[in-house]
Amino acid sequence: MGGMRRMASNEKGISLVEVMAAVTLTAIIIGVAIMLFNSVNLEWNATVNKFTDDSRIRLTTNALTKYLSDANAGYRTNNELRFTTYADGAAKKKSLYLNGANLYLYDFNSANLTDNVSIGSPGVYTNGVLLAGGVNSIKFMNNTGTAEIANPNTYSAGSLVKLDISFQTARTTVTGKSNKDIVKSMTFKLLQI
Image 1 (cartoon, rainbow, N blue to C red):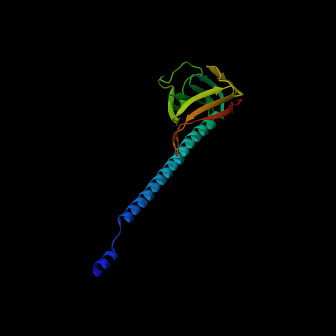
Image 2: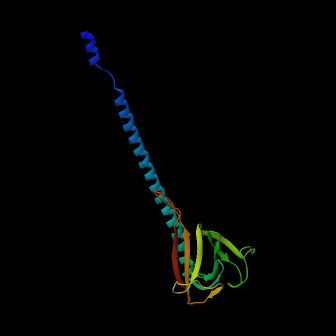
């Protein structure tokens, strides 16, 4: 009998309670690791989306600044601003055209800025460059920025052109997507040449 007691008290291996504790602890650690990974991944995506949105907006505003700061005449129709610019040294007519959610810059090849032509007119709108996608609207505002200017409108040398461009963004937060519009206001005084 003494040998039986010795065998009973000499336990080898691990008990069921110890196995359950190890499994539970492992599950908790894996769960925390997955939540941490998802949080870091969402934050990374938010940073990438913010950088992409900011770059797109900066590219658009830089291009508009280049051409409109050297412009001396303009004509605004529904979703278009035609203007004469000297940005590249010689006088060139350009068209800033909002087509759906895409903002384009075209060379405008017509005798006058006020000519009644459409985007489909052959040979009039050439060398189109997509400035930005995800543009909700472009508004032409009065000098104080309190009201939109009536359509059509002609801008002469020395007048102010105030644009409000609304960009749609795809920002991500830890709690999910947040689509917020960013409105960039730009004011240009047309040159008196």
